[in-house]
Image (cartoon, rainbow, N blue to C red; front, side):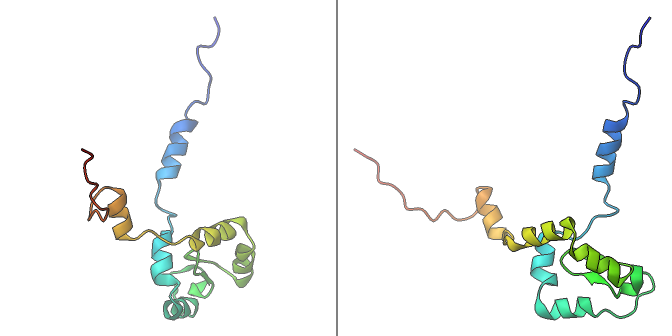
Length: 119
C-alpha cells in the first residue's frame, strides 16, 4: 500500500495566518502622506525625545516607513534597501480622497449633463 497523500500539507494554513497578523503592521500610505510627511510633523518625528519603550530609544526613525531602528547603521542600511525604495515609490502616488472613493462606489452627485432623448 502506498501513501495516500503528501506529508507536510499544513503550510497553506500557516501562510494565511502569517499574512493576516497585524503585529508588525505599519501605518498606511494615506496616513503617512497626510500626517507624517507634513514638514512640521516630520521634524517632530525625526527629533523625538528619548523613549525607553521604543527600539533604539526612538532616536533612529524612518518617517516614510514609520519604523524605529536600533542603530544609525541599521537605519542607513534600511534607506538603501528595496523595501524602503518600494515604499518611497508608493508614496509618490497621491492618496485617494473620500470624494473620489464615493464617486467610484456610485455615491455622490452626478455632474454629467442629461442627454436629450432622440425622437
